[in-house]
Length: 443
Picture 1 (tube, rainbow, N blue to C red):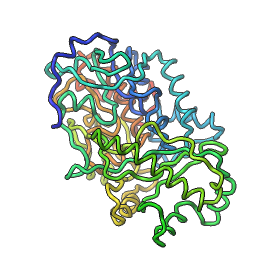
Picture 2 (spheres, rainbow, N blue to C red):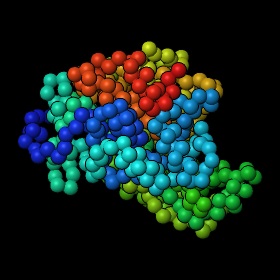
Picture 3 (cartoon, one colour):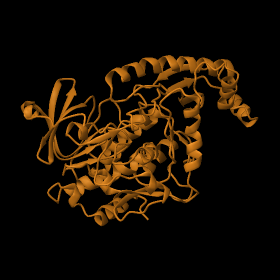
């Protein structure tokens, strides 16, 4: 365990706000949790470290939602599809692509603002979780670092949607991070290009010359500017704009301060190198400009909490069904390389192919995986729930974070009538509320 339980000094801080449900983190998981809790009658405070909601989908510039469907069923039904539907409508797209749907980050931010305002959620931006106060098996407060220094926020039930399980770790919950040696998937720093001639590019793609093929030809000839075998992608997010998840920053652990700092600096350098490749080699990008790099590093993996149940690869392989499941999902195992080793990089896409489900197949996500050991009033949502590394690489993508987020928020609201004990929530009641209030997919 990396941290001990925080002391009572937090009690001496000035209280910023208190509420029934405190949701920490405003990315897809936290956004869904806050909306679900509010729609189930709870008073909600939503804390976000940046200046916008949406996390990876907005300030992280991750350009697409993947997957919202298993090919037959809309597994991301509920908050994810509600928000995605509004975003793509404003983008002028008639129907959501169930596999890889491009998203405009500015539109995403605006839709998020409108949703939380309509729900009456009390949002606080620029609030970084700094510490946790715990009394026995209960979290009693979080300390946040904001514009006026450290403040105290108290609540009855807490949702940890920080992505890094910060609330859980600071409260003393045991966790794992990365592989058996502690190595984590390499993050990226996503980018935006303007001035793209999409017609020219799409004509080239139709003729069999997409940017990935061109990059791999340079790799095979020993002329690629970076040792990057796993070249992800760029998506059309405007008439002449593309948003790209391009390049990896190797050797960076997202909960190490020195690594994260290097990640941002090196990520901006990589962004320039890859953009030169597009301008010089890819049809349609000759006159493009690199106009933005993300304000949030695209971290794929850090802590995974120890919960009441560890969702594991055997569950994935058997398409597991659980009596307490709060959703189902189908994205394949997608563990990005932690090094520049060409074979390790190639193995990423090979394993995705090997583990891909047939159309209509999916696996269950049990409520127990969201309940951290030793804490009675804390729920975890997003990529840090209790699971092994293979399953985490499937659940880390944004639609899955929406799924666990809306379950956490609903459970938090329901626990208010059960002495705020999250384990006391009846899963049949939880599932019914998720169906009725959110339209969640729960067969």
